[in-house]
Image (cartoon, rainbow, N blue to C red; front, side, top):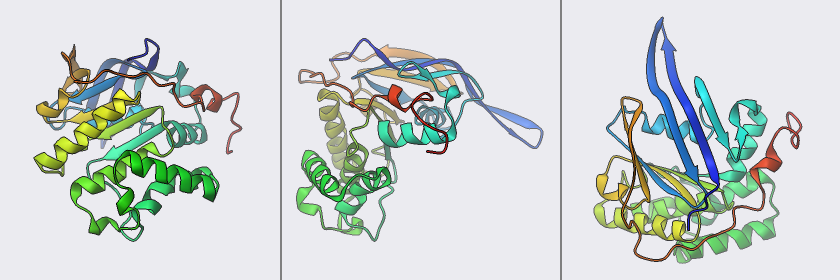
Length: 260
């Protein structure tokens, strides 16, 4: 069930790249709201601004103008250190190219975000085991990425994104390097995670997979041309989940010392 409370609220957001006296408008006056428990697909042709918008939502890039609020806090008010904390603790990323470290095992790859947080070894071990079981990869825990299929590597990438219990899961073309069988498997996994309450925002150029989501936002030349509800995207009943107890508000300026 989708919570009526907005997790992401974007208003009149634009992104302009300036080089050698010229400027390129990647995004123009974007308005977008993502609710807790939502599953939103951003779709459109290459160069339309999809990945740029996802990078801004994930705090990997900044808008040139407009307002972006996450859990009612304006991102413009956050320092670089505060943005890094929110990104590490509240946002999980899934990339088209998996981005697994080749000389690390499945378990070590999944464990990495927890190491950056300073989580104890015992708790890391427990959380890694739980999330690998969740994506059906427990038996591959000691394998290296090159010993896995593309679909299995993407499942490991999903586990790594989930291990820190993020409030928001961002997926950038998660099936782009997969065949149809593995692509369908990963999309089913994302559907199940959303049914368990995970908020998902996914970029895709594949209209088949766009309809797995509850809503589809179409971008063209950096502008939203449609924002539509998908009819019955899931076959099973949605279940609600409380967001991460580490509330984003606790990471904001009054709670974080600069440089911490």
